[in-house]
Length: 246
Image (cartoon, rainbow, N blue to C red):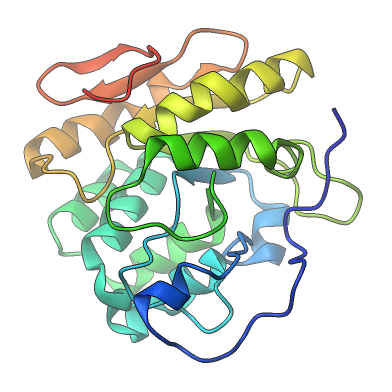
């Protein structure tokens, strides 16, 4: 299956922020937060979600790279826990445990962001926004339709940002669709890399449980060719099954 360029939108993006309904009609882009830094980084952490949250504000260009780059000066676009907990996941993947715990405890400093953000790329399996709770059927249909573009995240064409060294899949909807649609295609193409599943940043995971998760996140990542693990509420790391709910 050919890999195509996920970063080139088919239509120009309107520059104005409007209602939640019109935000859900935009096609999002998924650039690294800092493409130059990502290209030369030892740790390249791709965080995979289900779909953008159309109920919150968005940057004008509807790019997740811009979202994370501008979040701290844009009141986190109404979603501070998503920002902080995602950066905790990134720090965990980089084995920066102390930094990860500062994000969880809301004591992170500006230097902690500059440590994590250059290593982050965030991409959703559905390129148009949904509501605060992702709809499994819609996300799976989008992933099946746009599979070639999704696979380009791991097998980029010449001139595009390099592949991630680790992929973190957030939330049970994204994990189910990833297991059903994306992972078999990665295996069929013998794509190398590692992956692990975590709970969505907006879930009611306690800070204590999240600390336990990020402390061991890097160690629990598995090669694409192997069965993965995911963090389950109340159980810790469990074998990755194709389930929609914990």
